[in-house]
Amino acid sequence: QAGLQVVALTDQATLAGVGEFAAAGRALDLRTVVGVEITCLHGERWFDTLAYGVDMSHPGLRAVLATNQSAFSTATMQYFDWLGERQAGPTPQTIRDHYGIAYDLKLGYWPNKYRREVHGCTPEQVKRDMADAGYSYDGKTEVYLQLLPTFEVALDAVHAAGGILALAHPPQTAAKWFANLPDSLARVERLLSAADAFVELGLDAVEWQHHS
Image (cartoon, rainbow, N blue to C red; front, side, top):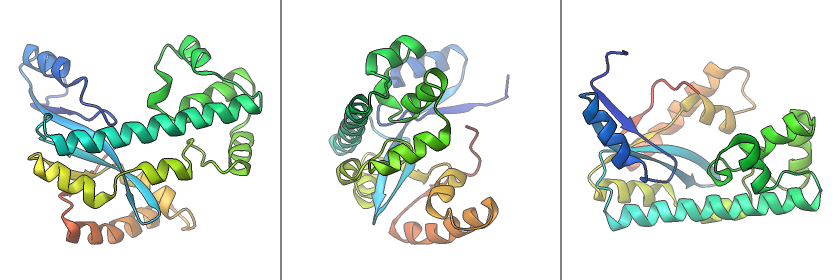
């Protein structure tokens, strides 16, 4: 209906849905591209990238995705432990029961949403409580960051797997990196300036438009 001829699936740190996605594309006479979202670390900053056109069986790429999954799993369980200690809820099972989803794919997003909807916590309360405990708002911790692959490692793996790597959702990344700047346009401009360093390292593209 949108008139697209080529579509890509970029699930976070997993290629599990690629086969089903490709089958659906064939049924609709659409060309499909194998893709995946990879969270990287550069210095002290983490950010998301999108890999396209990769060989999903490549061992180097598989190793990077396994590292991402390990980081997500570790941070998520630490986060739920922290919530349990504070008796703030929820548990992994209550997340599944309430939303019908796998709790470990979105880190702190669904637990925070649950706390707001079920426990009546305001976003400000959630942010303040988590900051006091050393967590960022989305549930990430220092341990999580230490487990992430560096940008260079992810880039090399994607290129070795025959793909290209793009910087994902610039407005969201810019808001995290340059929160002190006055407006979103200034933040994105600063991010694109910073992205020049990634281009010199081999970054292939920057996502231009993102709807979330």
